[in-house]
Length: 396
Image (cartoon, rainbow, N blue to C red; front, side):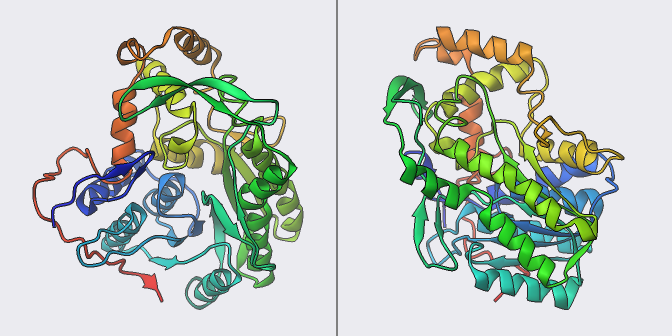
């Protein structure tokens, strides 16, 4: 079939397998170009199919020759209906990993559930015996609690009064003011339950109880802080409460891993175009301006550049550099004073008319469509493609 992008708001409803394949190959080639990392050898990535999770799996495999197990929830293809992009990403990652002689298997299901945890542990016991790195990179907006069966939905709301600021429709480039009413205690509870640290801790407890964690194991979850421009709706909002909980959980997990000399970290990453960030008001406009500034300074990074640097310069060095809160700061280039000062100045001037000159909306738009395999260099989108791509190592 010929697959074209069909969008609804901040979501693309279709994905292109060949574009996704090329994205995976490009990321692999980048990691290989940076040389070998003396890193992990047996890796579990929870949330492995897109964004930072996919980049973590690629960096582990092609930077450290690691065996990897990926856990995710993705939609498979059916005749005449393409799969979700994460499905294609995982299929082509596994294809490339197997060509390179690397172990790679995947589990598709609800990572919040006890059943998927049990299935993952069974696979580890049977085939890898133990894991020395666990990446936690789930970005789901909803969670069914595995004990109570209750369904929780996260919300994006400020907590210090009504939030008003500019945002941009990244499809049209039109800037408008948005207003978001403040959240309440129930909103906080729901968001923390979905996006906080409880499930990360449940995973680590289950893995440790099953004796599948190696001596000196590490685990990393991903977070974001951001600038003053976005903090009211992000870090000081309901999501910020969830991130606070996630970061506090790292200390609890480290304590629980004491006998293994294990360590839990939260890595604070830079603002990037992801399916999750596209849904957050203000963030697309902020990223458009940020991209412009960081590209001009030659310090712009995408997901794969961020994670390769995290592994090579932070996680697998003689000492892991952390901030006063115990976090790894791989957002250090974004948060440089000169970068933030220039973005703040651009924010004061930007309008619908000036955005093409002051920002990089074109770069934002391209990155958004790249997530779904579109606007990828070298792909002929007029050609028919086989949508029925399967994941070679998918576990049933």
